Length: 336
Image 1 (cartoon, rainbow, N blue to C red):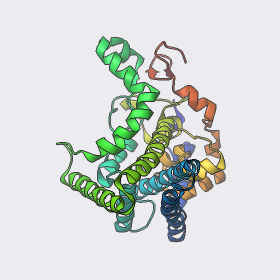
Image 2: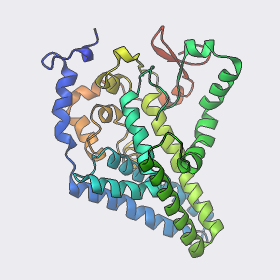
Image 3: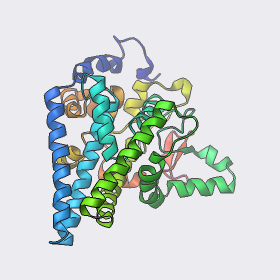
């Protein structure tokens, strides 16, 4: 029996640790404001430098665009934390800041976070796939599919399509559209986000020229989008991940066995807002990103989770099916 399934807090260490780490979920106003300042201000500053660099050196412009994309990823992490209600004590402030940074990240606040909450409630559940996740078929499903379904799945799981085309599609097109099954609140928030982006595009086009703005904005967004999707992919698509059927699923189990610990160099860890500690985040989503590293450092039990390194992340691109027989991710030819 999996020890995580034991509901007795005296004999189940993971239930005990989930209670112990509740102390990290109290946001610090000072740290939140400081993180916003050291992320938002440099992002705006880089935008100004990029515009001026165009008359100096395109190589300098390219470097500044790459740097700005890193800060946009970090802004998205703040947006993400606001949706979990973990960044400020006030939910009104969380919503205001989250919506503002969502506009900068081309992402409607309500739509994205409603899907993300469903992701937290269904991640790693083979019987509840399809919302807020990377679509993953089992080996048996793939083998039983018709030829056209296999072709579509292969195209979807191709890294060039998933990250190259998919990143722009998600942020430029998918995030702009409403659907019939969305709530009125979600639809209104999408309209609001689209209108805000239109105002920004219009204002910046008058300020620096439409072509110049589009090239800079799309370059920053594209690099940030690829990086963000890559991070999201690694969080639940890796060699040692575990999937469960609904009757065996619980959030504590999937937090430690279905969510990764991606070990980044310190600089990348900073730009990614500690999201590499994703196993801790799924165990308690109310912990602000700036406390995840401290939580990891002060609780040795989290270090038992094998980290995903850069080389392991490259290997994960070949793993596209879940084999229920051997309980492993495998490639299309069945290899691990």
